[in-house]
Image (cartoon, rainbow, N blue to C red; front, side):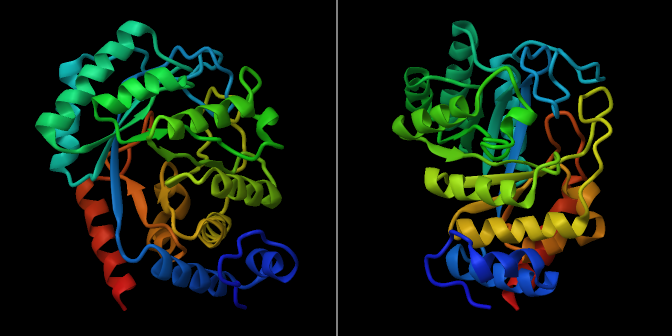
Length: 314
């Protein structure tokens, strides 16, 4: 099966192939698209949970929502010194980008001031590219962040427009898109993806990837839902390894030249088949843990990268 050059709207046989063909055939196609479109560059990112918990939003999957009863630590914005120290550690472990992540749907002026100062010092003194995941910001604060040195803004659409009301009711899907548009207007790169395995359909996953293509985002993190006790999705059935890998393939074929990162859930869902996720089209990952979940050791992930790069070179 051959996907026509520049074709990404999947209909008829193309869609049927991606959804129904033997997994390894789809993996082979996705790996070919990855090699031709983005080459063998592997992007490693590290994040700091700079402000945790007490979020007023009702995202059903999130351990940081104040509507859920979880064991997630709750604290206000970390100090500038703590954020800068975390950036130095991110560079030391080999991350190419360092993300500052805060809970909640925005920042107050004091929080914005602290983060702007931290970004400026990290850019000038640490020398690692800085990303921000700071909620639904307007263009003005985004421009201010960019002027301080911010390179990329992260704001997930989470799922398709159709399925979004099933997982969040306190803010709209259009608000997510508005923030992404504002970030692009501010001159920032955009990182936007979402979570797979929340009960969405295959068509929802395809629609999600198509919208990200239309929005022309630069990087797409794919999180694999690991149900967290105390959240509204605590009893959700976990997605299979095969479905996770097939989803990564579909995102690569649709998004072609974008960075696709496997984020939270890769250790638990892919298990011993993590390398297969990168043969399926992914070319980046988070290292050093996630917002509320501990990841693998740095040494294990660095070894994984070496193994994947050897496979890509064959």
